[in-house]
Image 1 (tube, rainbow, N blue to C red):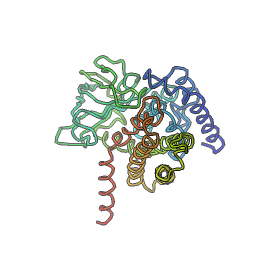
Image 2: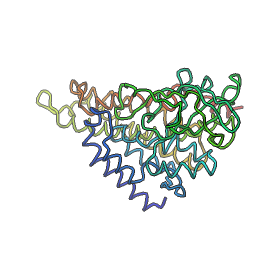
Image 3: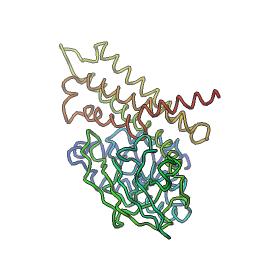
Image 4: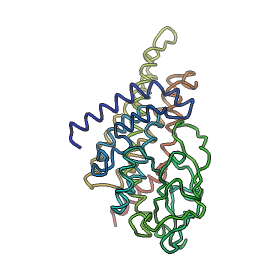
Length: 380
């Protein structure tokens, strides 16, 4: 994307978030829904396909541009970004990276215009470690029959397309026997469960999805090859980790602004609480985390785009930033005192919303294993 074009997109996104989304955060929290007018504005701006290549109707943003947008998305409720996040990230990138040309031409323009894709990998016994995946796809002539269940699937109640990971090999084949399929939401045998009732991130819907002998054509096999699903998933997740890290930085920036304003305006003993050194210390820790996280994310994005590092830096950024924003939210609640524990306070909502960042798209513990193994591998 040309620099001037990207700046225009970035400015428009910032304006939309500050003027349209932030004032309605309480409404989103209470109704557990993104208002339809906000959804329409986001679609009109191209946000449902901003990382999809221009040749397929998207804006073609690279990861360095993506994270700058994610800094802005993170400033408001995570539900706003979640509305189109899977299109641009883990689900859409499966098509971009591994789809056949026919698959890309059929689906990517639809996603760019506002259709929703969901990434269906997680199961009850297969989360951070997909080797335990039990959903199966059996070849029958010119079709595959898919049976199984998925859990915690983002945007499942809204999805037009499920990017489904299923085992085509024997169980003993582990991750090597996993393939990925494009399954339309309306096919017979596809059932979406009720919305999950979560701790936070209201308006970002997740649900279980059940596949009961769902028949899809052989052409629905992504890339036309069996057994490459695990590698395809990991490529999408690695990129997504840098994006999630950027969201955490954006949320921490909002937390900092809310905390500084409260410390400057709230008084105890006739003095603004911001004059107390221990409050200043907590503000300083939040600010330091924001600056460190922003620098780490931008460097990780540069390294990813250049191909210099698509393993350690994404995991390190996701690990640091997801832990950092949780600490920032905890400090913010403490700074706000009793008000920080009250529903309707921004930092209280952020405290709940931030907790998920340390779990999805690879837990903090998984990121540590990835980083540690990669460092030791380099010594062999």
